[in-house]
Amino acid sequence: MVVDSVFNKNKELNNNNMLKIENSQNFLHSKKLVVKLIERSNINKNDIIIEIGPGKGIITKELSIKSKKVYGIEYDLHLYKKLKHMFSDIKNVEIIYENFLEFELPEKYKYKIFSSIPFNITAEILLKITSCSNPPKDTYIIIQEEAARKYAGNPYNNECMRSLLLKPYFDFEIIYKLKNTDFTPIPKVNSVLLHIKKRENILINQNEAELYRDFIAYVFSSSGKSIKERCKYIFSHKQLKRLSQDIGFQTTDSPVNLSFEQWLRVFQYFIVGVSIDKQRLVYNSYSRHLNEQKKIDKVHRNFRS
Ligand SMILES: C[S@@+](CC[C@H](N)C(=O)[O-])C[C@H]1O[C@@H](n2cnc3c(N)ncnc32)[C@H](O)[C@@H]1O
Image (cartoon, rainbow, N blue to C red; front, side, top):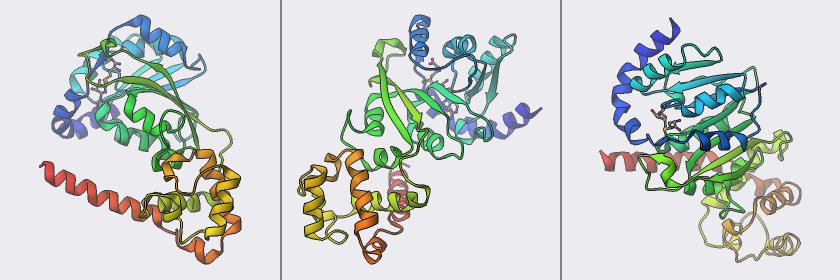
């Protein structure tokens, strides 16, 4: 059986990850709240849902009533066995024992995600969901409020490189603020339900997507506090002054002070108003940023071990 071979393959990994998984288990305990949260979503009887970490099945059960099919991906062996038993008679629920980070997301059909995710792998989950070839139409995830604000950027927080890189493709909205007592055990951090909606019309032309990524990465990883300092090699003083007047910012602002819409307009000018030689300065900035990030992560890992 496919599930059994996956089961054996992951057994060893599961032991290694057991500690981390245990740390990431805060369970919802009110059916009423789960019903309310699903009602805030656009999930309906035509939808195929993937739930990351069904845990004790409280969300899974309600999703099975509200949707066509639910795939629950659970990586805790003990919980997986209980869930298998619990949903054995419910035809539209399939419980899969796998690390969600290794799970193959559907490529051919539309689906949605609804989940109270393990907080310790928030960044990895969001990277997977937003960078796969067929992202979910709608993602509803309960995550730490601080992380949700960072991803959603303006109007919840200042924009950051991450929010600006995602916003041409996704729209973010915090739709519910949970109470810490909604979970057992009670977490120390606040949680919210974040809706990540895949945009029907992407706001960047496909042939400009790479340049946009490099442009944003260049601005955010250049040295200096202000836009004026960070952009001095790609825009002339006159260009930047004009842009700031037209788009409504100060050249002394930090890059995080501009909204996504403002950065999009700056980028549109960068494409048409800046010479190719200057545009070349931003090339590969995103991959350089990722390499830097890897080095930092490695240092942190070595430091912790
Ligand atoms: C925050 S709990 C949520 C449980 C349940 N959905 C609820 O709301 O009560 C996170 C769940 O994700 C599971 N989990 C942790 N890491 C996972 C991974 N890499 N892949 C799939 N499930 C994982 C945990 O075992 C746990 O059941």
